[in-house]
Image 1 (spheres, rainbow, N blue to C red):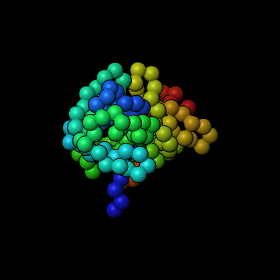
Image 2: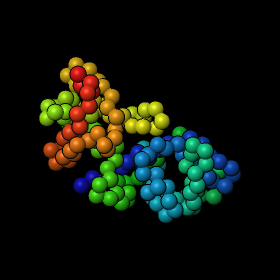
Image 3: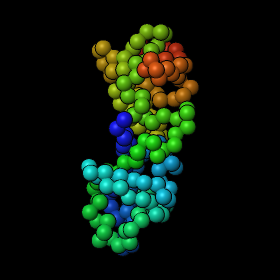
Length: 167
């Protein structure tokens, strides 16, 4: 089985002169990724690095990497994407990545309404499913309370009845 790399953010800049880098990330499990000793993979070639230190600063995840102690060593990473291997995330049995929901059939009153094609950020950091129906795309709040049944084997997500959602 091919290793699955998961996108976790983008290196937007360096910070200081000691090789610290600034990552912009909206990844849902940052607490599992940005920890010392975690392996990250940078850029298209997935260059492996190991986190030495981590701190959160403003909107950014700030890390230093083992073997990198100078700004000149890390400048080449600026603008590159950062990945982690799915197997390294150690997700609990009931934890799923946003991307796992893409492609699920959305059912409402036992009727297939459409397919989840994307997940967007809404107001106040709330997530929204983008559901493509036969005639349009609609946004559905991504809230556990609104999901009555989730069947990963059948790739089905059943929503609780909400007046006006698909009417």
